[in-house]
Structures are given as structure tokens and as C-alpha cells.
Amino acid sequence: MHKTELQALRRQYSLSELDESMVAADPMTQFSRWLQEAVHARLPEPNAMVLATVNASGQPTTRTVLLKEIRADGFIFYTNYESRKGRELDINPLTSLHFLWLELERQVRIEGVAHRLLYEDSEAYFRSRPRESQIGAWASRQSEPIPSRVILEKRFRELEEKYTGEESLPLPPFWGGYLVRPSRLEFWQGRANRLHDRILYSAIDGGQWETQRLQP
Image 1 (cartoon, rainbow, N blue to C red):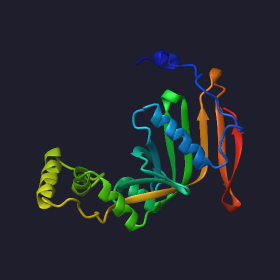
Image 2 (image 1 turned 120 degrees about the vertical axis):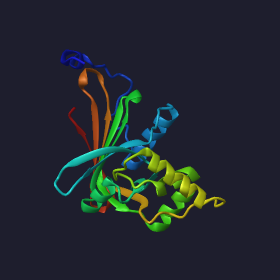
Image 3 (image 1 turned 60 degrees about the horizontal axis):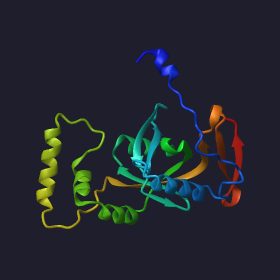
């Protein structure tokens, strides 16, 4: 695509607005409200979020994962602890999440700290997954090179045979959940003329939150 074509790609935002008087006092309540609206709008993968991590050299990287639970104290996702993101979160638990709901002209940016879940919490979720997903978690050494997909599929079949007749597989020792406890959440609503609405929640002492409007 030519540079001028890219530069010409733009749209006007006009679906909604976001004002300080409209938002909930607690950002988790506000987030749950927006997520529910995204679900009701039948958006594809409304719980998809971009997760950012940083390695020991300071190189950031991002990937999309799925939000699996919202708690009063944060956001939960699951992954292979030995994957690149898992290793980087062990080095530096500071992270950010990004939700983009283009059809609603909205996005949410979150900054916080990732903490591993208790084994019992990870196990309970793992047992709720489809059996094929459980086998897939055991079969894949996530982020590691592999010569061929054939090897991966062979490993899957071997595990399938090994656990024949068993309703659920055991939780892999290298797999589990993270809770991202947020310190900042920014809610963005597209508006006309690029004068977008941005409301920032920042954590303050006592578990309270303060809000302020940011310029677009």
C-alpha cells in the first residue's frame, strides 16, 4: 500500500461520549460495564487483550491473550509459565493490558503488576477447559522452536492415548494463571474531530481511585 493511501485512512467517531459524571467510582465496575456492552454488541473475542512484557534487556513485546476473569483486585489470564511472556513476567512483573473494541469506538489501557495465581485457582480453571485444550497445554512447549507441526500433532495424539478414559488431565506444573493488579486504567471513547474522551483512573492510598480527564 502506498504511503498516501495509508495517510488517507481515517474515520470520524460519533457513537458515544464519555464524561467524568458518567463513569463509575471504581474502575473495575466501569470496565465490567464496558465489557458487558461489548459482549451484548456481539463483538468478536470481546475479552481479547494485548499483553505487554519486557525482557532483561529492556526490549518490550506484545501478544494477544484472553481475559478469563475479572476480580475486584484485577484481571486474570492463563498461559504457559515457561513461554516467553511467562519468563519475562518472572524477570519483570510490571505489565500493561490493552482492550480495543473498534465497533464501539472504545479502548481501555491498563498498567499494573502481574502475580501468579495460587495452584488451586489455576487447577480449578484448567479442569473447566475442554479436554482437547488440556491436552494442547501439555503438548505444546510454548515459544520453543519445533522442526515441524507433525511433531506437535504426534505429541498431541500420544497424550490423547495416554489419558484415554480420563475425564480431565492433571494441571501441568508449567501452566497456570496470572492476576494483573492495576494501578492505572484509562478509558478512551472516540469523538468527532479527534477530540476524543479520555478518563484516567489512578490508584491512591487506601484502595481508593482518583479520576481525571486527559487531553486527546
